[in-house]
Length: 337
Image 1 (cartoon, rainbow, N blue to C red):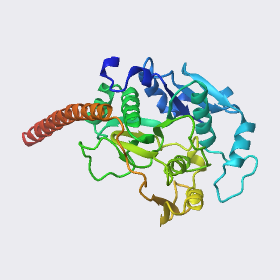
Image 2 (image 1 turned 60 degrees about the horizontal axis):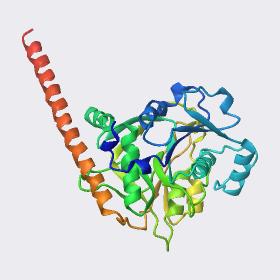
Image 3 (image 1 turned 90 degrees about the horizontal axis):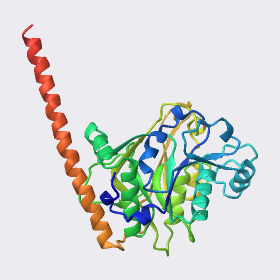
Image 4 (image 1 turned 90 degrees about the vertical axis):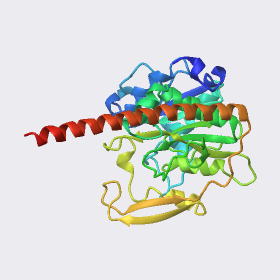
């Protein structure tokens, strides 16, 4: 993809470190995010894997740098930033928050202004919708490079300090083509500003939401944003990585740390297949509103979304017309039998 197709200046894109946080998934087959990383070559910094040092020896490599962080440092950091209702103890499940913190520190050491934080189980990227036309539009727009471009453009042109794509599992009633970004809570695929003022990560679970709440503090101008046109799905089929550790207590730490920002609801008798209560959390709206600080860059990103949106909808109409023709042909063939 030519750099001229990006709306974010090339030097700003080159100042982003893409970092995939991973743990407990040594096989590349269990880390589908790897398929999307080549799109970032020659656009951002080279992508890296962030893995704890005791996991790294068995990790299957894909050619990208594997950066490790020490288990003893992780345990010390976890003990100082622990949010679970169960007191921290040696050997406790640490989740991803230590890895996220280490990724930010590596980006800062390398002089990067932002880090693109990625979970290792991203399964599909799409533009506007998760239909075939949306997946094709995302690929045609540059794949993960498209995501980096628009997330960076929004971050640089607003007061957003943590700007994410839209997790498809989070319901959205409608897509507005006139809305490039809105306030919200990023998950799993987001860009974060690094440097002075960045709050530390806390965990072991719901670390991304806790971090967004830490950015969105009274008396500050920072906010957290979502770009609804950028859609992604995660691989929920396995019990590798962190998923095997999730249960009905997953959101308790969030409720303890930020009771004013979250509400817990028990919905049924099962939680993530573990047999306990199925607990959901509902977060309050982000308090600090979005402010556009660079109208030219923001408008350029809006135009890019509108252009890709027009292409996506045109492709979607073509797919639907072809499907209707196929159905009509099958019906006609059946009626002649």
